[in-house]
Image 1: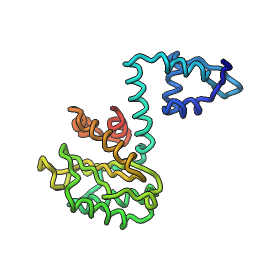
Image 2: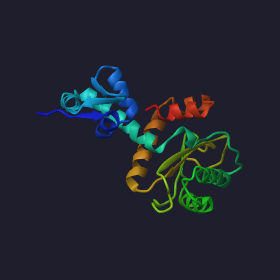
Image 3: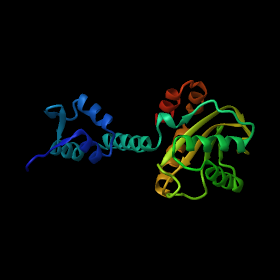
Image 4: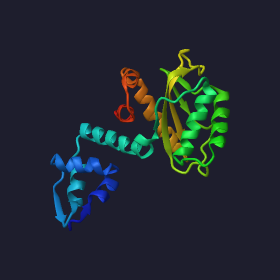
Length: 218
């Protein structure tokens, strides 16, 4: 069979991984490369052969890498707001809504505030462990410019009618264009919070990079 050489970018798209992960795989010897000028290329046949011969454990590792890659499409270091101030849940929602506008994810923070508050008044989005998953009741593809997950920290915490009665200091704001994106991210965050050390690590974080690395760690 005739072989085809593809770029790292094309290999990442085919494997559903980030380009950095593919480069790590090259550096660890999983794939060999050929170069044309400064462009690194990989044998498509070699990739196909590697996929075909994956063990169950290796496939599970690949699936986890794919999950991280997809999560990183929505969550970036610049999506983190640390040490904002709020005296109550409505001020907290307001701060997160304004942050979404600053990032140009939405045009109108007042609209976002209203739809998130409307969702909140149905039932609290606080899930315990000092955390709330803020989101509109419905997805709004025409209003959300870029599918995104935002994270905010209110160090003093606010009353949010949490099931464990504890104040909420960690706010995830889910802004997506379809249900698949929303449910995938909810599933990821639920797995993150199920980690016994998740909140402890968040409590010890100091910088945006700390928070980003912790939340992206599963």
